[in-house]
Length: 285
Image (cartoon, rainbow, N blue to C red; front, side, top):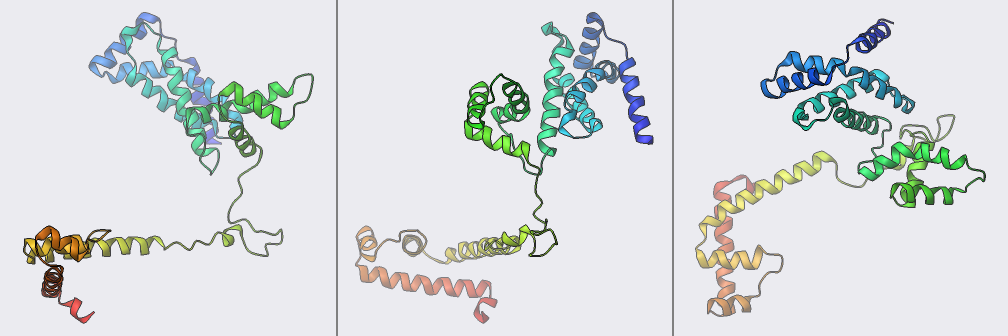
């Protein structure tokens, strides 16, 4: 009850705020832009809150609290004030309208459904205009099939017919909770029970990543124990996706492939010694 009274009082205050003449608006906008005068910003925003309230009323049919829409519109109004250039000879209300609408639309898209949608400009246009276009097309003298309806909306908004069909389905049906029972009596479990994933758990993924990073650091430190030729052989034989053959390395180094094998064995032993010396617990493992 107190919230409702506060909301009505806010609306009355906003609607009673005086309009700004063009010269006064320009003067205040300059003060805010050049001197960051907070009082000037307050006067600009208070004078235009009626614009925010009027636009919030247009979006009330989405079922979200009008008070929340007004708050989001106020954020857009402040963004417009921060970006407004008073020297472009454009009234602030004209400039701010786009920012207020965009802020409210983003809020609606984030909160209207638990499933996020309408991230592109075309998808946003589809979300906010589909119902209106559907009603207008359906009011014609002849009834339209869904296929014909989707084709016309697709042509009007520049989106695919499949996108229109999916959005129409989303707007026509409520969200379903994964915790909802499969049967009316609550038996047979929940929808969530049929979404079992075989992927590793998040803590397992993080643990594996940490282990890989730690072992990589250990190996990098141990490689310092090798000389240049040993390091090249280990890198090209063991540390690449397609390891070089003994013969290829022998030709590149000017030695026999048997000699390459001997150097590789010796290098592996040196790595093992270096790793155990730095981390004795590996010997127990």
